[in-house]
Image (tube, rainbow, N blue to C red; front, top):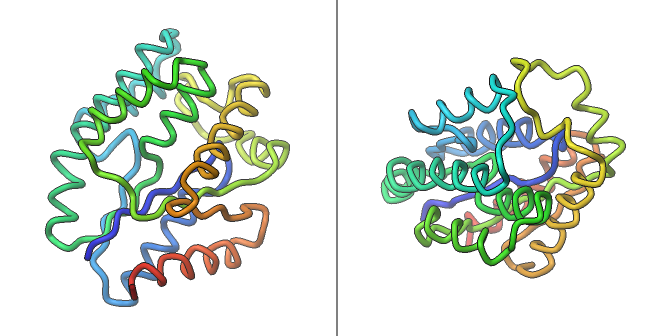
Length: 207
């Protein structure tokens, strides 16, 4: 059975690095893998990602929510579902839980509204496991200093209070569904973090 594995966490927690390491490990074990990121993976998703990085025009939280939901709706229906149906494991750098954490808890939109948007966009596709890379904010935000960008909006530039709400949101989501979530200490050595993730994924592969 093909797995949908999502990676979540705040800025600078090392999600991209760990996605790449898991892709390599799975491929070496003979699995077919499709790595994706949100927003992205489709023409509309890639367009939105580029636009968000290049524009400084402020968005209302509601607009931000619906833009991310629209990109996800296209990705789920045209890429993720077909890949899973073909037996391909999908590794996703951010998914609906990021929307709940960032637009719900971070932007303080009503959680019920965020859940409704996520339900439409996700079309019932739920991750088999969600890896939450968690670390103190002073460490993770420090990692984002000097990142290359195109001069547009970046979540890294939000207030510390915003990032605290996002972090708390992720932890609340993980506490609510412990059977799906695996919390990994992102402060550990990169190799040790990968080992913890691989142990969890390996358990799903052999079930």
